Image (tube, rainbow, N blue to C red; front, side, top):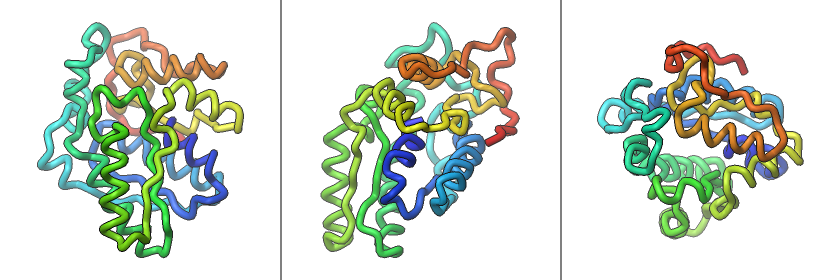
Length: 220
């Protein structure tokens, strides 16, 4: 939701959008949605494979839907299991190199304030440090912008609703199933954000025990 909102809001200055296929439970669904939004906006979409992360890194996001905390297990301690070590640092480094190769001057990240307490690579201090590293490492040719750092997910969705973002072309569920499970952390946050923006909520809990169906058949 966050990256797609940023894609729409800043479409007039975005030359290319990048999805990293790193083997997370929900990557296949996200890729289809990202490609569809870029096609709609006429923005070049680039998908970069990072298979090594699934192979060597440890995170519930990489270990299948059964590893994702659900329902009553949703708390800061359990959600720490969904951290992918230095994910944003790795991806931003690649994006910076890509931007410089394409003759672009800016890399944008759609982190938000709700991520700060769980994900260290979404915090203001990280963004500032990465901006310095990117600027130094590219000879001051590329900078990092993160316009949503101090916004909540609800505030981002409200902005998106005002500019006509089609959130049906987004996917959030950590379990990666055919439908949003409605029980994982991102489904809960998605439901709250869509409701706050006055939009239909598409991620209510499933009525059966198959919330973690992993068939990646999202339709974008």
